[in-house]
Image (cartoon, rainbow, N blue to C red; front, side, top):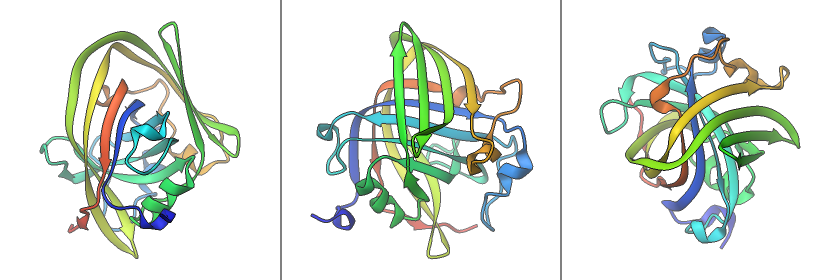
Length: 228
């Protein structure tokens, strides 16, 4: 099976996932990354997902990989729950060429990169690297109790051949408790991701800051045209 012939959708189970949301230091620079037809959410919130899939046995066809993706919450449209804002990908750093090829066909701006999640004595450190150079480091305090199970759909927007496309991504994740997002550092001032760096002091969007030791989800195959 070639990289580009993977059947849609694709299932991933039991990934280790750190999700963060914050207010940027430079909202105008972040908003400038949106294409025409999209506007940032009123609170200008950004999001980032750093996760690791340790084994090919956790995926339908992708194989093991690591990923960091990020972008902006959007105004005017919600996920199917009617509450969670739709989101736009600005950056997507994936260790697997198989996954990169799959998502590029669906308008995701995929490029090479690696992500590690290291949990030691309750401190979780997530590091995103491009060409071996750390560009983002997130630190959180994480407990060992599963306090709840989050489930539903996220809606992400991409561009395919110049057209905006939406996709709903179902997920089920076990959330660790207690949890505290301690710090979020954008380490490379010369990298395009620096436009998304957080304000100082860090302004967290608490409802979207969490760690899941087991998060399962589907990459969509049923995308739809995004109408303003």
